[in-house]
Image (cartoon, rainbow, N blue to C red; front, side):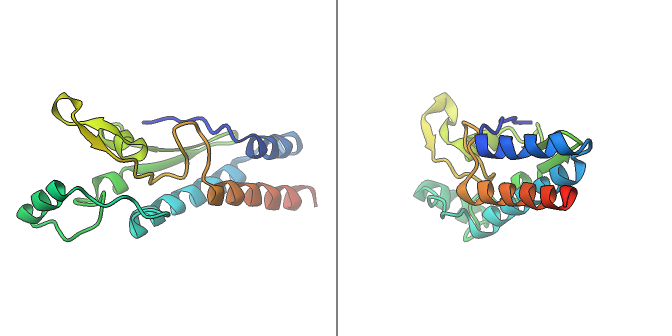
Length: 156
C-alpha cells in the first residue's frame, strides 16, 4: 500500500482540536475516508478533475488492437479503481491501493516506466493528494468541513 502523510497544517490542526474534545474520533475519520473514496471514484469516472492528459497514440493503437478502445483512461480492466481501499480507526484514516497493483504510484504521481524506464508516464492523480501529502483544494475544504461539522455536533 502506498502511504502518504497529509501535511496540510489547517487540516491537522482541525483534527487535533477535535481530538482534544473527544476520546473517539472514529466517526470523523470514517466520514473523511468515505469522502476521500468518493472523490477518488469520481476522478476515475470523470477521468480526472481537472481532466487527465490523454493517452499516447501508441497506447491508443495498442488498446484498439486489443478491443479496449475507445475506453476510459486508467480503466482498461478496472483493476486500479477496484483496488483503492479506505481504512480508519479512532485516530487515523488511510486511503491507499492494494500492494498487488504495482503500477498505482506511477499513475498517481507520474514518472518513467517500461523497459529501461524509457517511457514517461504523466501524472494522472486519481487520489485527492499529491506526492508531498498536500490535499487538493476541494478535498482540503471537504475535510475541514467534516471536521468542523463534527466538532460543532460534539461540543454543541
